[in-house]
Image (cartoon, rainbow over all chains, first blue to last red; front, side, top):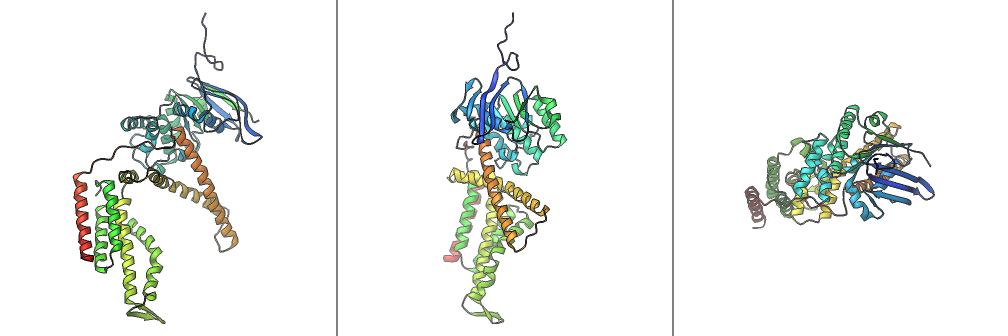
Length: 225
Length: 238
């Protein structure tokens, strides 16, 4: 007899990476955006997170990496319960969040400085951080963009550089908040190609059904409270 | 000029400005202006753009230059419709004009022509506060985003038929525009900080590479610069 010691949600031999239990959150008191949410992301899963505007999709991603503190419930990441800001330092390094607006993410004057910011924060030396940065740029197909000025890039290039800044930290999980918003078909196809080849587990927020169809393994739909 | 170290260029620009503002003789200032043009030439500044930048600064001091000859007492120079201009006033105006333009031009050539990271590492090498440098870099980075945001709001206003006139509606709308820009900037600052936290930022910036040693070219440049400064100092006060 074979015994599966795995995830209860996907049923496979998998390890839970991020788990939310009975999480609730409200921006305005007594008006919860999320209440009683259970969610689990397992190894090698690519989950589409969908729901109406204002259903709290981005909020969930922010709770996962500790940018927002839930009013109730438990956040577990990589096998440990995380509550305080300090607990999330490690989570942020292992779960990379791609923001909706790339301009929020790219704050350095040049591309290379932005991409190596994460690795440097992880304590790597200048040389190693540069190596990681070059590799990340290569993955997104932007080798040679190192010395380009960040704010003069096109919208699509900014999005890919932002993805590179996250990949440079070699996270185990990718949390993507509307990665296709504002991208043309060509850039979107390029993004799909890049994401398909990545080994990381992902949570993807997107309204683009075509995009999701090509990538995801499971869908989670948020019902408004 | 491109290979000259950031620290050297910043020191040179400061020295240039100090000496130039202290000079008062028109012949020396003319020579200084000429050397500023030379610096700009060495730095290969784009001619048209640089002239535009200088003119936009001159716009600010235009009124001062135009009124100084008439408001300074001294020897009669020329007069029209009851106003008389003095030679001393004219000289003063010329002095201010030359000083401002020479300082600006040398600054453009020595500092502004450098890539931003080079300015930052130059300032760091000179012991400038890390926080101030970061504020400078973030300002450079986000000023364009802010301009785009302003333009988006402006276009949205125009699309609904807004035409600036001198009335309360116009000024109120401009007030809203400015207010909205500030609110949006604050929001963006929050989001940028969140994004930085996600990449492991904990309040202090990772230190970047140690500054390289000064090369022979740097010393050669510095020596020539010091000689030129010494020459001007002796000429003016010697």
